Image 1 (tube, rainbow, N blue to C red):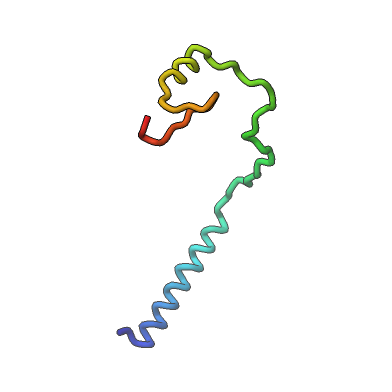
Image 2: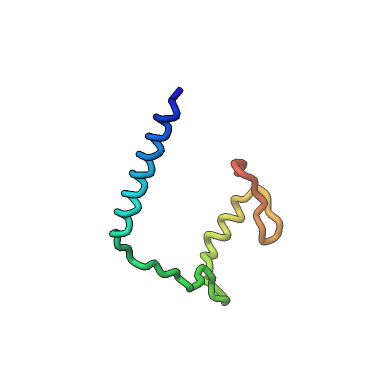
Length: 78
């Protein structure tokens, strides 16, 4: 258990440390950050690239379950 006198001394010492740190931060020079305003990550609408037909054929031949142009698959089962 600390006494009231020790408590007050700790408080004064902490304030002194914080004040000196704040004073030191005033001297720090930083570059201004600018936010990017560009929105990205969108694809252009269009036909896209043509897939490899041989690969597609082999994938569908190997698929145990399929429904038309869709392969029905579950995790770790195939």
